[in-house]
Image 1 (cartoon, rainbow over the protein chains, first blue to last red):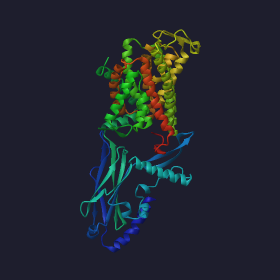
Image 2 (image 1 turned 180 degrees about the vertical axis):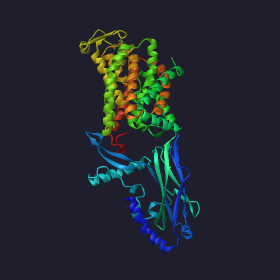
Image 3 (image 1 turned 180 degrees about the horizontal axis):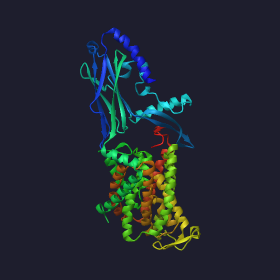
Image 4 (image 1 turned 90 degrees about the vertical axis):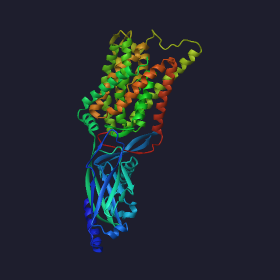
Length: 258
Length: 307
């Protein structure tokens, strides 16, 4: 659905843009690396994405009427949102709602504040921005009001823990054609295939989109531990126990005080 | 200095974890308990997911109990036979506990259940210990000799059938309460990530009348196995043991424990028990407050099926 809307948007907005000037802008982005490794010292990072405009109109460029929004979207996974309610004075999880295919992370960088780039409607049509991602409830027959409340809560929690972030002014033009976007990778950024997308706007109209893929994975050691824990749980458990016993024994020898 | 935990999938501060391990280790050495009842809530306060805090807490407890049991074995204050009977019960309890743990987690009630168990258990054990130790302190102040163990006096537990002789403990008692105690500790161990020393020690002293000098060693011995079994089950069914996290806690813990044990020699028994009681109560109150105070976030996110 989102893709169809994107196509419609291109058709609608590309025509008048074409009529005004002979320029048919194009946008390209490139990642300095197609994979990021999370090492033991990883505490979040800034990812820089470079991009260029092709066939940009120098006049529009000088007036600063080109805007770029860059999105780094994490892999989609199902999520359960639970709400605590009071039962006999104790707060416990009561109601819950499951959503399918929710992007685990979603970082946005823009040239200017959202409301200055284009109207809310085109964001909706492009499903662009954390507040416009469609969260598909697992059970659609539920009360729409409940679904809306839980969808809002899901977005708020994701934003609060830093997995959904906005970096206004995070995209800068280095020259007429070249721009640089900085998106934030949270310390608990999910591993998997992330999709980087850049949206070009001209005079508040959507022009073009370009995308690239980024693989985020744990580095050798962390990955090895994770794999071992998940594929050979029993051996991993034995290893953990062995480690604990060795540490306990060594600790007695090293730090002995009696 | 930050470090990325491969299983918890978050980045944490190494020094905070080492200090946490050392502080808990010091207290555990001081009071002769495993310290699991302190480490698991501390990890949860530090934003480690509860499921991982519980499983990793169990793993960490192995290190401190193993270290403690070694010294008791050398001193001959370890009843292997009693330990193995407790263990047989413990295995059954742990298996049931891990199963209940997975069910609660899928229902989204795991956090609540863990907190409630902590509040009830720590609150009652802490309260009883405080009551007993304050009485003992008063008695010693007024000059009377403290009487912890009333020997020769038997309770209903000693009338049960299937009696068995435990030589080191100088005990002739039915295996039923021993197995039941082991099972209860095993159950708690797998749900709360604790070794259960803070329940096992008073239970062995007051219910089974095991001599106090054998209690700590035997309790530590069986805790190694119950926590080991719990770690193994959590590692192979829930994948929630974070070995990096456990290692950091253990290093701080074994160091702190030795200093704690030394500091403990300077305090009198009833003073130690009163302090431990206050500590246990403080943790219980802190957790109880969280249950009743409006949480800052009513909504929480989780992955269906897993963590």
